[in-house]
Length: 509
Ligand SMILES: *Cc1c(COP(=O)(O)O)cnc(C)c1O
Picture 1 (cartoon, rainbow, N blue to C red):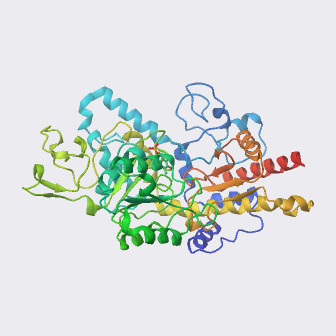
Picture 2: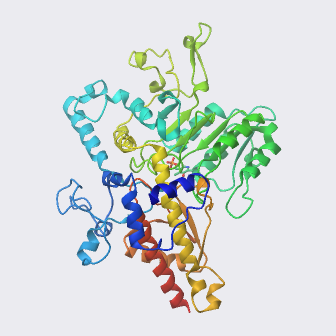
Picture 3: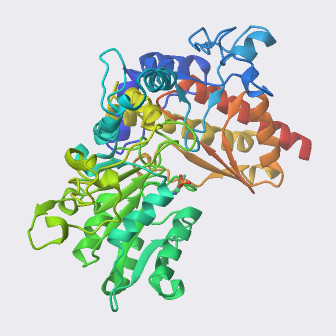
């Protein structure tokens, strides 16, 4: 089967060999029909062109004529024929899961269950599990979400995972435990263009220890363009190893979409004596395959509103390797337990004694302990991942993004074939994400090379019912998420883009 062959080629580092008719709706439909995960799209409510124009609440969900069940026929399968009304009801091409993932239908079901439980038995919900409810007792929900996240991050057990706070707060908490500057070992190695919250968290942690960020922050510059090679990262580690207290990098860089070789970089830093290696997985969790435990990563943090689809501002995650999470009885130690120091709270206390309120902190082993209402929406979002495996998702993702790149290459080449040789000399855009599929997630970052093109393309995409991310001045980030996007979406997206670039070029000449 075409789909499987493409996946196998991509996984083994070969050219996927898209055929001559790849740039056709027919071919896109063939791949979509062979996609073993195509049913997962039905787990989501995607905006429609009509819903994107809404100016207020109407009590109905996209794709449903009336009522709020969101299950009616918002069918995208054909783009031919139909009138403007049908167009309006079509699902949008939602390529912005790198910013906010689409809504799983399960979220409404889980939240309804949560609200009914709370209204019906109040505080009893902490300890009650109903057989017909998708939820477990509230005090077990964090552990339940951790269990469902094991495959996403490659933990050895749910004990290594905790769901709590935001990424930024978790970065601070992790650095409270893992950034221990002492003597000449005070530096944090990071990358040249970290997400602002990561930059500020690192900078302010350094200042909190009374140190000077100009001396304690080491930023790795890209060697070519926007890409940082593993060799360069290892060279910077070598240069600063003796003075480094922490290495903290993104798994997938949010701007360029580059996927870092977490295994090799972690091993290299640890071999050179860097005491702790942490990863920000905001753009990696739910996007690429991770094996945090086996890679011996010390800690990691991630959010759940991007590729994990738990909703805006949803609760974040953190991983602490099992070797840091042990708790041992020791009569000499304060409260009688020996463990790695942590900034503690009452949900960090072992469940068996949590409600004793005795203020004799008995830490729960591992990373654990938190509770929040919004674990319900996370639990729902993770229930979708339970219908598949990260390996399956990644296989589809490799093919989907390779197809997107193939069609983009075609668009970039359009003008070369055109009669005007002057236009051929400067392509309209350049992909800044690594071309090697194994060095990126689902996202392709496209740098537009002509002034004003971003606005023109942005307007055309909006008009065509596409939701994707535009980073001023001139980057669009195209993220065909494998859970709810398919090959037909990629084809349709590229048709709109191709037309927009051609009309912009015609208008300029
Ligand atoms: C999205 C993102 C964040 C967001 O942090 P919040 O605490 O959720 O606001 C942080 N870091 C990176 C790298 C991100 O991509």
